Image 1: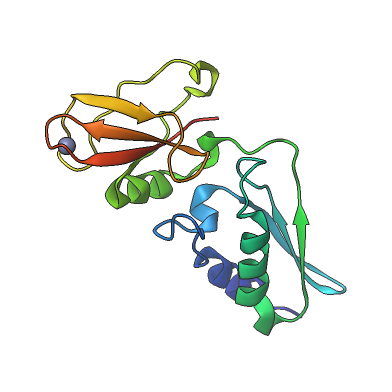
Image 2 (image 1 turned 120 degrees about the vertical axis):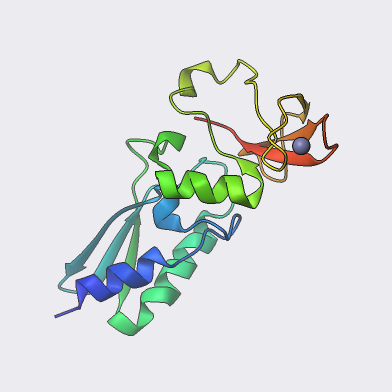
Length: 156
Ligand SMILES: [Zn+2]
């Protein structure tokens, strides 16, 4: 029998390839981990459907769990992932990493430009520079107080 608790612990340590400060579990991408006759099955719900990191994430998960036997990665696209699934710990780590976490419950208001505080100096004077940052999931902002750019993880 596979040691599911140990496998779960190992899975919880796999970082997101785009934001290594946050784990896949903290991002809310991991839906399930279960033992099957064939080994382990991990169910993932990818974030933004256009995110090219999905294959990379599946590879990372397979590699992390390889010692537990064969690993099947299943992608479950419905219900769709939403930024509301990011755990409180995940949100904290995003903020520390310099990315403003998605504003809670604002998924409906995606077209509304939010008022963000700078993750570095907490300054309230910020402006959006670009709707798209290093990935389509984020937008680029600048703090007028400290002049530093930062990214905002857009809610969906
Ligand atoms: Zn600032």
